Length: 318
Image 1: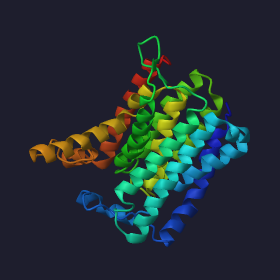
Image 2: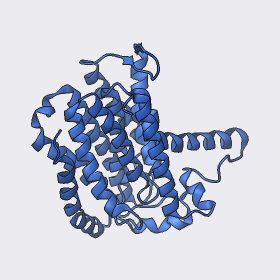
Image 3: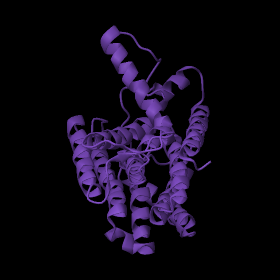
Image 4: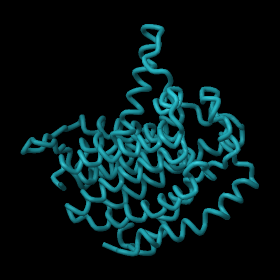
């Protein structure tokens, strides 16, 4: 394991963000707030977005410098491709949002299609060196999913990337819970001695921690779809290459919770014409109940820690 990976990524990213934020501000790349956001969060339209650009590019550049041979490895190649690819889809969406000054961005169908296509490409590369076996906690022998595995991959990649995107609604919320989820997977990566992946996770953690110093309340920068889609895709591909697909649900428990609440809310409104929750994404419901934004974020961080702890127990790390 490269012990300088995390501090190096943190220092480089931390030093670059002030100039990056100033440039984004000059370019007027401010978040155009959705009409569905709570009134208290309308001020975020003054905060520059696309902050994910740095914590996507810097880990990839540093990985190229620190472990160049991994870029010819298929197992690491799918990780790099996923992180950059989903980041580019998010950047495309962010660019349209910034230029058009609304949160419509890419058509939902176009964004979903791009996510699906990239997931298929990643699976095709992955299938050339791996199998379709799924390991399930407390079951001794892995289960062969056969052709159903590609369906699982599509759900994992599109679901997780969109789930992180849904969670990115409060200062420090998505970034903090993502750090916790990645730490869980890092521990699992070390357990199976997959050092190149462990190093890359450390690089991402370092850059993401630097981003958080500027994203904690009151945020000076927002990650945008560039960051949220890339991070969600990264979680999915890490779970896939580690053969820990089921544990993705556990380590990413906060993101699963956010997504399920949205799905339940939409289903209830369409079927019964009534809401189950005060508001979704669910973190806004806490605000409507009188919680401060910082309290909501702290609660979700604790929830993420509990999910990570359960994941480490199920994986045998603890």
